[in-house]
Image (cartoon, rainbow, N blue to C red; front, top):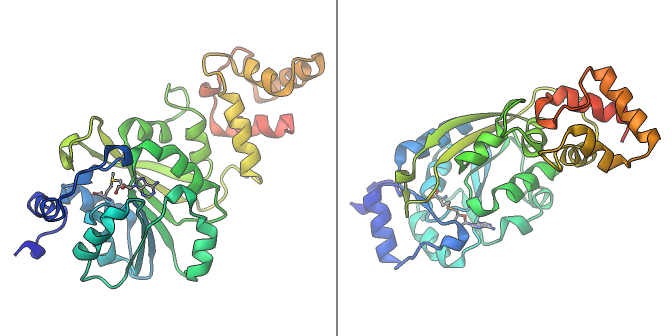
Length: 290
Ligand code: SAM
């Protein structure tokens, strides 16, 4: 009877927790999804087909993993907590297309991993992230020389809002540009606190990042561009002008160079970085020849 229910069904989750005498570890961001609709929404956003390979981060007790395995060709799930391995062995025993890897995702070289596994077809990252390391995980996924077809990631609502923000808004910052310059982004789903066990303190949202059809902003060196973007927003309350002087040096020559570039892109010297579109920031990057 028990095994016919999805893992995310609260009755089944409860039974699993009892059976293995589990205690959710706060320090590992363990909040297990107990809302099947939310899980279905995440899986739908990933638009999985049977030739897709999924990389999941933090399978927990397997609630999302089992649904991914039902749609994708293969699922590789990285879980740091070794006490969850026997649980996953049990809850996912009927699937032969799942591999659980007991590793800290922040220490995994995904380029090597994908090479080793000889993965062909689309690779998608789907996860209910451990929120305490959302940003380093995101930056790691973007830094790699891999082109993920899609990333469907559940995170704290506020971070999702930063990622999908538009210019002129307080949330629009370096994380926004680092991500939006590489992938198209949208919020697919909002998920309330009651969808988890234990109930978290924050609301959640699912962000879908999709591969761009073209390199829209014609960025050749993302590492260099991202460094520039971080400098533009280094002191958020200060003007872009000031942040750029800190980056380039406060000499007359640099002042003239910035002034000239501002004139060419037609912005005032008191503008803040958050007021500029990604296109303008990119133009500035090119003009300053950093
Ligand atoms: N996917 C499950 C679900 O939706 O119910 C659990 C999600 S829970 C929010 C986050 C999971 O990430 C936990 O299982 C936790 O142990 C795992 N985790 C935390 N830090 C990790 C890390 N550095 N590398 C891999 N997994 C990690």
